[in-house]
Length: 205
Image 1 (cartoon, rainbow, N blue to C red):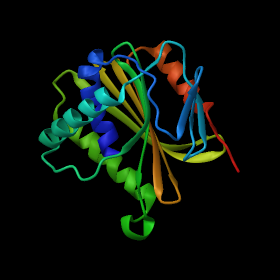
Image 2 (image 1 turned 45 degrees about the vertical axis):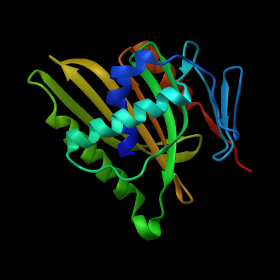
Image 3 (image 1 turned 135 degrees about the vertical axis):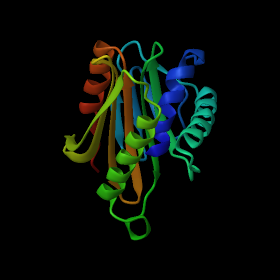
Image 4 (image 1 turned 180 degrees about the vertical axis):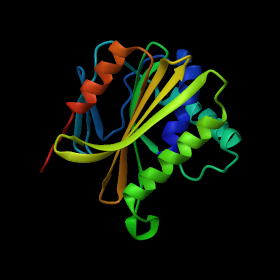
């Protein structure tokens, strides 16, 4: 999840260079405005006005984000999350889903892992804040389609006015961590993203 969150800063800086392209993997489908991921049997309706970030541009952003994160946190990034999908509307309204391997036998307790990541992210971004800016975070859990997800909320404020909202939802499926990251500056577009996610479906076999 650290990688997914570190990408947000770079995405916000460079997303204007991205052009929407409907690019999916061989196991995913995009018909009309519905995205389906076969691996997690996950369906989500893409809000109007949101375009796919191309695989090529995402790879560039991921590399830049990793470099930026290593410089900021003064630590080496190990491993990368695999993108499932990513969408944007204008420059500063973005969401993505990704996955990475997580084995409780070797990686430990999953909620504890999420809490450690949340605290790490908060601490890292706190270092780069300027005087009139503030971070506010909330850690909780929430049900999505009957499944419990770990939830991390971050708000970035300038002069007591909210400038950016970030939400991260994570859940362990067997030995894979599924994460959805949402970031927005426009409340109307943010509501579209959040509603799409909260109404998404995980098909049960």
